[in-house]
Image (cartoon, rainbow, N blue to C red; front, side):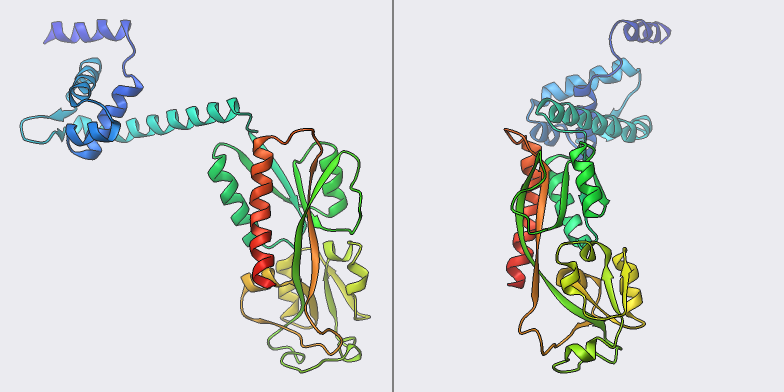
Length: 314
């Protein structure tokens, strides 16, 4: 027994204590409950797995499985090492995925600016789609006013901006753009508002009530055209705006944002508007001769959400 321990110690000084294949074999046999099923999962010969697990037991100097019965059974020592082995395999797979992503030209970090009228459901869907394609890339979502977002884009501090279309034919120098479509906007009130369920509201009637305006919408080229009331309050945060609407007033908001919040807000029936309004959005990104694959994936993910949303509301 002493000689065997000395041999294990001597062997451990010459070779690695455990290889990735050995750990993978150990974990697979433990999870599948048999060498045969583990071999099918790993697409290897059963004899290969037997050898890898046996070599691991020799390297570690412990018995991982009891082999007396028909199926291998984890020993107490094997059970105690299973979780750590799984973690090492997970980390190795993550490392390989990260190196592969870098080899293919992925960025380690992508920053996307958006204005406050972009609903959280859009961010969640776009983020999920992008991360499924680039799992090792960190994606930052930054709510910024349009001009600040554009400044960050020109400086190279962010990679994309999703913002309201300013109606300009030519973008800023060094910036490319994609028109994303026209999202539906409506004037909304809380269900307990005296304006709720009123038919054919006139502009003079509406002007008697406070109007809350999203700051990013107000600062757009179309912002002034949306102002009706002489009593206007600018709000940066959509959540705060919804809370204020519970007290009084009305606001022009994206339909998609209101629908994801709750059912406590109703659109107004106006005698001066025959149909709902629409405002356009644009995706801005640095100009380059050739788009990188990760850039195209972001563009596709953003475009998917806007195509889906604008078509549903059309």
